[in-house]
Structures are given as C-alpha cells and as structure tokens.
Image (cartoon, rainbow, N blue to C red; front, top):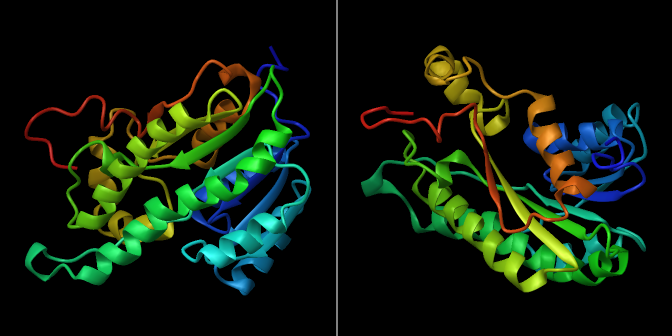
Length: 258
C-alpha cells in the first residue's frame, strides 16, 4: 500500500510554485520524496520560495513567464533529462462589473489559464513520455477551480470561463496522450492564496459557514490530492476533474450563493 501512494524519486515541475496552491503542492511533493522544480515570473519570488522549501528536499527554482511560449521552451529546457509529473498551476484572475469587463481581461486570463497549460504540456511531452513506464505512466495535473464547476459569486467572468475550459481541455488531452501520459485536474475551492486573500478577509466567516465541512482548504488537502494523482494508485485514472472544495460544489442547493 505504501508503494501505491509513493512518489519518492519522481521529478515534478510545478508552475506558479512560489505561493498559494502551487507552493502547497511543491512542499508536499518534497516531503513525500520527490525532486521538485518550481517556476514563477519573478526572480525574487523564485529564490525566496526555493530557500523556504529546501528544508523539505531537493528543490530548484526557474523563473519563467509561462504565458510566453519562448519562456516555456526555456523552462522545459532547464528541467533536465527526467520529468514524471507536470503540475499546471500558474494562473490569473480578473474582477470587474459585467458592463465594464475589458477585453484585456480575456486575453490575459485565457492565455495564462488555458493556452499556457496546453503549450507546456505540448513542450514537455517528449520528456514525460521518456520518463513513463508501463506500470506507472507520466502525469499532467491541471489546477482548475470550483468556479469552473458552479457559477461563482464573484464578477470574475474570464476566470470562471477559463477554468471550465481547462477542465474540458484536461479531458481532451487525456484522450490524446494516454496511455503514456495520464491527464487529470483538481478543482479547488477556497484555499489561502493571493487570489483569495481579499475574499477571505471580507467574507471568510461566511465562506467557512457555507462549507459542509466548516473550513477552508489546508496545505495537506491539496498536497494529498496532488500526490494521489501522481502516484501508482491512479494508473487507471485519466480525464478526471476532482472537486476539492469541502463539498461546496457537490452539495450546493438552489438559492445558495457562494
């Protein structure tokens, strides 16, 4: 059973790995014995996160803006000879009233949240396929959102659309890349992150009260899900989108506003 849920010795690339959910996944992967490469746009953020995470294991930081294909190529080129797990976590959001929602919000959010995971997976495919085995294929894990499953209570129109698109892209890529690469997604609900800071500061008690489990997500919650999807236990799973939201999206009733 321990081998079924082990990722020890695997190499994982986590985009947006310097903060929020990406950093949580990176920390848990390191604690589970994986070698982790984290990436983010800012050099300072990468170096700070690397110093904080190195207490847990072998971590490398590579600054890159994954909305730019050339930087994606450079990032994949610096991974090395092995890559067992690609976690497409880097993302952006935008909030504005419907009548004031700008075109730039669509370009930025759809580019980073949908196009970038596709491009990175496309570029990483040779490395992933070279690292796969018949008993334990390589993995791609896309980080979606509860906002791509249910209508959110925030005016983040391009974000919710992008996450719904990423969920379906997960299924489409899963059909294309199996059996050598398995592609699944996690759809998190409220977790402490820069994206959620303002909402939690303003409505944290309300959000917790509406959760069937009475709390927001923790590091171990998303870490366990990401380890599960990267481990031999899930070699019979691809194209799945797993809600990780304390039951918010799966138990919601009519008239309940998130």
